[in-house]
Length: 295
Image (tube, rainbow, N blue to C red; front, side):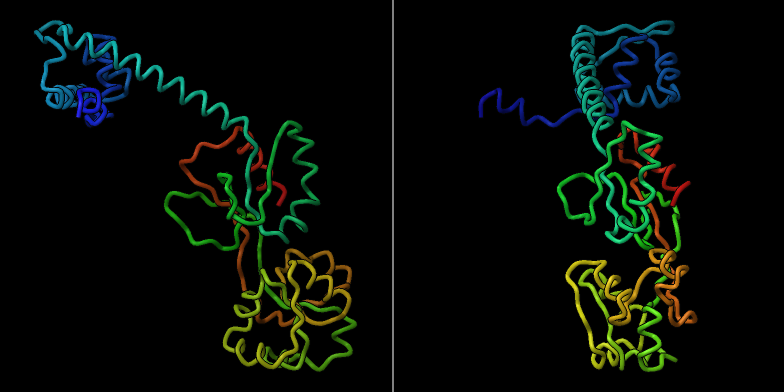
């Protein structure tokens, strides 16, 4: 291995010590560096000592009233200062590109269609330059700025805004209800037609609970690949589907749909969740505030 290769394989110095070294070299004062970095003088001194021990050289000459560079320290400080300046410039450039990038929001397809889209014009009216990309799945390659999820599992490094109820219940049309067999208990659904979409099969299992196995084995099921078609089929009187009540409030109020089994509602919530540490585009706060005020 030649000398160039050996230099490339040398470990980096303690990275937390480098901004401290830069500040002490700029002021040639531990006290002023501590004030600038909002640290204690003791913490500043320990970082410099650790760096000197790592390098195996003295970086400063210290006496009672003042401190000055050693020749090696002054040369190293100039290089560290340039490296940190280049790093700050690179970080600033990347951050600016992130600020100008579109927001990427993951959202359930039905929530996007029935809750967000009818309201979204008000967001763009308030923020005409905003750019938002909506994904109905989190599996894409784009980094995600926020996710609208249903009662997600909580993580310490994430923040959560409660948006709306996502209560789960079966529904059907009044026409279907009047012509079909009686529906007094969940197990009665075994004698009915259940409308399902591939994305929401688990909703039936969750709501049926201990009756799931028997009902789903005995009932006639009509399955749809695309979510939303099962709701259209329910409005047309083809059977019973399961849905988040918030998505069909208008149809229930107008009498197009009837909510069944009010005593067996599964209570959940739509939540906007996002990393508490990730840097996001500048439009993020505007979109977050709009969600909380309008959804």
